[in-house]
Image 1: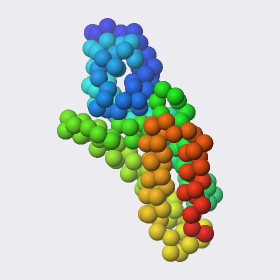
Image 2: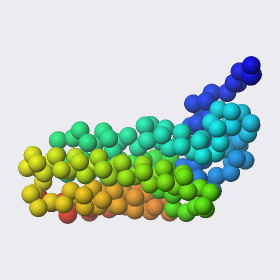
Image 3: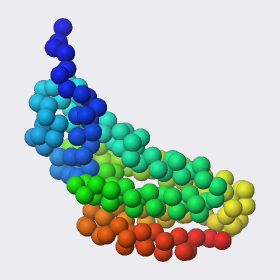
Length: 193
């Protein structure tokens, strides 16, 4: 029988999420994780498996605790309101924490070695899921007459997320929240009527 854990798994996961959010998968070392969580490496292994396992759990937590604004937006009345909620949600989240600007999903996947390929693929799948649910919501809007019959729902979904992802990169580079909000409004000004 092993010794009982003397740390909160939830708190350790949240601390690790912050490190991955700042540094990405590839840039995060076990020393970084130990320093952030206050939990020694063997205990982290015991609780989360390995760095990849911890990263994947952090990604899941990010999606449910931070990136959930995308799924909440799907319930809005019009496609434009959905797009606006996604873009303003991205602006808010990308600039909310001064110590971790940008998007966890973008910061973690821009570069990596062959060893980090499984984590990179998980991030790609995570972003693809967002695009799929937006496309499906826009298709419903088209069927309901909220979008014009000629609207390309797949392109609209890709467009909204491309703008959101670009804003994440800009936020990471220190662009002000007000500028990002203006970018979001500019993108919405081209919304099909």
